[in-house]
Each structure stands twice: as C-alpha cells, then as structure tokens.
Amino acid sequence: MRAPNDIGPPAGYPAQLLAVSWHALAQLVRTPSHSRRAEAARRLARHSLWISAAGAALVIVLMVAFDLTEIQLMPARGTPSLWPIRILTDFGKDEYVLSVLGAALVAVAFVAAALHGTRRALLLGLGTRLQFMFLSVAVSALVAEILKYLIGRGRPFVGGQANPFNFIPFEGTGAYASLPSGHAVAAFALAFAVSALWPRLRVFMFTYAIVILVTRLVLLAHHPSDVVAGAMVGTVGALAVRYWFAARRLGFAIRADGTIVPLPGAVSSRLKRVAHGASAP
Image (cartoon, rainbow, N blue to C red; front, side):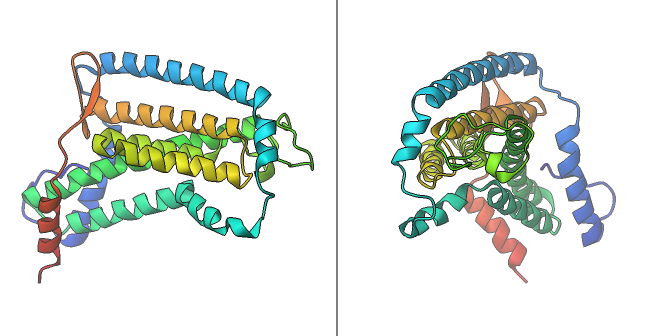
C-alpha cells in the first residue's frame, strides 16, 4: 500500500478510508514499470522450472519407494495422545493464515485512513508487505485447490487400505484431496514470503514450515509425497507473487542481474510512534 497523493482539502474519514483502500488495490494491477523486470522474469522462469522438476522427481520417488512405509509407521488416526499435534497443525491451515493476514490488512487501512503525510506512508509501507504475504498464500492455495480436484489422490488409508496409488480424479471431496497438502502449501508460501521481506527470519520461518509438514504426516492427513508437492507449490507461488510486486516497484527492487531484493522496511520504533500517535486523544 502506498499513500495516496494529498490533493485538495482534507476529506472526512470515510473518504480517506475509501482512498486508502482504492490505492491499495490499484497499485496491484497497474502496469509493470521496472526497467529490469525482463531479467527478473527470466530468473523466475529458471528457478520455477528447477524447483518444479526437482520437486516432481522427488514426489514420484517418494510415492513409489517411501509413502507406503511411512504411513504404516505412524500412530492410528484419532489417537487421543496426538491432541497437541492437532492443535499445532492448525497454524498451517490456509484459512487461518489468510484470516490473520487479512485482519492485519484491514487494521492497517483503518488506522492509515486517520493519518497523513509521513506517518501514513510509513504505515502503508507495512501494508504493502502484508499484501505480498497475503497474496503469496492466497494464490498458492488457489492453485493447490485446483490441483487437488484434478489429481484426486486419496488420503492415507482412505478405502481401508494403505494404498499410495488410490486416485479418483475430479472426485472433489476431502477424502480425495491429499495431493498437494494444503497446509504445506500455506506454510511454505508464508515462510518464503516472510523470508523474502526479512531474510533474518529465514531459519525461523522454514523451521515453522517443516514442523507443519511433520504434523500432517503424524496425523495421517497426508503421504510424504503430498507435503513435498505442497512445499513446491507454495514456494513457486510465492516466487511468482514476489515477481509481480517487484515488477511494479512494490516492496522489492530488481538488481541488474534480475535478482529481486527487499526494499528497506519500516523501523519498528517508528511504527510504534505511529501507533502511539494514532491512539493519542
């Protein structure tokens, strides 16, 4: 979100909120303007191809050689002692992740509408980064839902047997929505998005993503190949969204070789001062 230009006399709060919301949406669909976007597009294509090829090969190997063994080693579905794992796994549920990010975006818009000048620009800089994280997860999750429907892979033990080759394409129910894992998609898309903005958080975020993957296996919600496929979809989806933002000069810069790097973010102390000023009488 970039702050809209101050033109004419100050408007009332509803008009300011509408202006902030309009500009937040308009910046996402404006014409790409970065002079190095072609180089970045070529890097995106190469990286996406390599990740997809390596991920697909690993999925096939796991499906043939490891999926059956792994699900037979896991505790029975519904084991009472697994309740902490069932709570932990929800931290990777795409609906919950998107709800939190969406609520944060709405909060930023409401607060920014009451501010002006530098303080509004500072807060909306955070809003742009929230938009990137939200869309990274949302776009990846949408692709995953389409793939689930097209592939129709049965979850572990659906049909009563440990059969990793139980496929009913276009079946459309939760029982046959195993590949790719939606939790893995959301966790890796979020991990990549946060790491792309704040590289120092990379280890923490990808540890979080791997923990979510493990919970899906322990709960017999997915085969190992499902979570690997989900990690691949989430990563490629977030890569594509990052390029979309960088090509429009939103949150990222593009170097001469096409490498996309984050723009300097807002300093936390300055954000605290903005929040304090917004809440002051």
